[in-house]
Amino acid sequence: ETGIVHLGLGNFHRAHQAVHTATALRHTDGPWGILGVASHSATVARAMRDQEMAYTVVEISPDDTRVTVPAVHTGALVATEQPDHLLDALAAPATAVITLTVTEHGYTFSPRTGGLDLDAPAVQADLRGDTPPRTTIGQIVRGLQRRMRTHARPVTVLSCDNLVGNGAQTRRLVHEFTQALPAAERDDLTPWLASAATFPNSMVDRIVPATTDTYRHAVATHLGVRDTVPVPAEPFSMWVMEDHFAAGRPRWENGGALFTDDVEPYELLKLRLLNGTHSLIAYLGALDGRETIPDATARPFITEAARAVLHDDYLPTLTVPADIDPDHYIGQLFDRWANTALDHRTRQVGSDGSVKLRQRVPEPALFHLRAGRMPHHLALTVAAYLCCVAPRPGFSPGPHATAMADPARKTLATITGRSATASGPPFVEAVLDSGLLGDGLSDHPDFA
Image 1 (cartoon, rainbow, N blue to C red):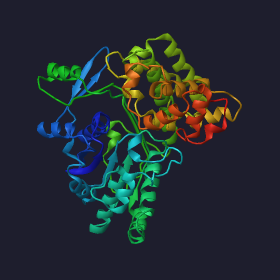
Image 2 (spheres, one colour):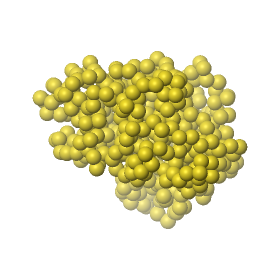
Image 3 (cartoon, one colour):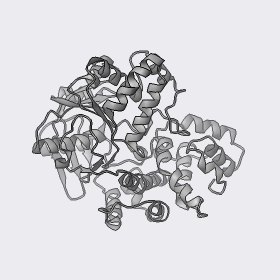
Image 4 (spheres, rainbow, N blue to C red):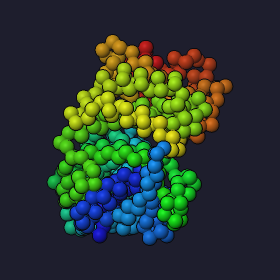
């Protein structure tokens, strides 16, 4: 039976949460099937329906290929095509957990304030009640509103995205949306949210590249079946959560998940050491003409830069959890990045950098700057990012950088145009003044 509604039917969810859930259900059964909801693209949802909700996960390393079929989804729909079905699912009495992997960009928050971007046209439309709701936060709030009005059963909203304090941030955005509703709706929904909805923090970790024909061929070879939407993944997978669920949950601990009262040290470890270093590798690799992350890490100067940003700039800003051996963890990271069997593209890792770097660079950079130290390789991360997505006139960053998607490209192009005759520092100062990476870094001209 469906007990979980998941927003964001992408590769990461299908290779991470779905796999952990399937493993948990092999140990302890329960009504924890997952209804997967794609935001816009119907490709995966339609393929899964055509394949009776089955798909394969291809765990691949240089030494081995392992193919599994999670078989935990009960349905797949597309929010833009079936909006009322989505709201009904969020409001269904049997739905006890709403999970989401919509990327950092999917939360429609302001990079400068971290709060809900109330000026965004899609947010304004969702607040007016235009149908269907278009933003993730709007969909969640309208679904919870319908839930409260029909049966008012409690529910958990569990973010599985790379945001610092992702549960607390999701709760704050939901409450900011609610507070911006008309008074009658706001006053009706606010007390119910406070008593019936929980938002645990979580940390997720698995490298999941884009699907290519290589993986489709691997499935055909190993299982003798045709799968149009297999998911490639590295063997490593980690999931850490607060055990704060309002209406029950699967026994995810039997699927390898770790429950703790304090997720933040695990979040920061992953966001900075893995994700932050990963970004630097991607941008330097793309600028060096490297298509994949393993290609990039094979370049000695990129590995040297990655080790420097990790050890010198990120690691001093962390409290490593007691059950993590930092040397072993860092060794695993470089082994994972060097996994030549995974076609993890620099363009994929480098996309949406304006949102990703906001989570990864400012706080550790300010930690050093306020202590009188220059975090040179965090500065290099921002510089490499800007070279990729906001190249100066006359400079070509190459095809892999050009292919990176980024919501700030238009804003950065405007700044580039204004700074076309200026030297490098004024351009970077203008970027930092724009709030792209928050407000604090603009107070440190030496960083620019």
